[in-house]
Image (tube, rainbow, N blue to C red; front, side):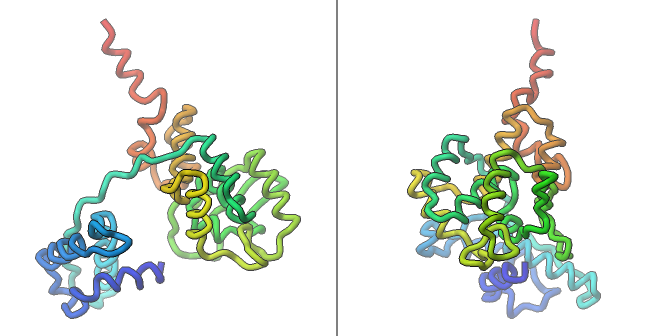
Length: 263
């Protein structure tokens, strides 16, 4: 989280770095939004998207509220943000995941793909997973690091399916570090290049680790599992998020209401 905040501050500092915390205004927030939308880069030729700006200003609000709660400032000003975009619906099929795994040319990327699609884990949780939290005999993975006191999203205790168990047993034999996802005996910090290479080779250039997590949620909904079960599996704090994103993929979604309208 600290590294993320440091990265965010690079975008916020030019405007907000010279303003007293309590003097930040709605006009400042709107000006930041307009400037970021107009900021064209090689990575973002159409300007920075509202989702990124929403996160940047959200981090500013978080810091100001922290300062207020710790009595560093008298009151945190209101931070206006652009509306948060609707979640992306892009997900892939089981056959596409098989193709993706076949195109992953390094073992730790293949194992990561299997782990993400089998558990619905966030990529950070998967990369931080250690073998002491993988109970192969009981068939359970605890994605939450007991030594990490930070509040982390989407970290549940989930069962291990048969395919993942086979891959984990094989990986455990060759393990050279405490981390499940490792390369040359060291934990892996980033898989962007490896995932991108596999995705392009598979003809699925837009696939990311988050797409795999989202696909896992879609598959669970399509198979008719309840929103409460899916929420627990994905580590959602409540079912509202789950229902908003995945309910429409359920074959039973609103079916009872439709039957009430029969003549």
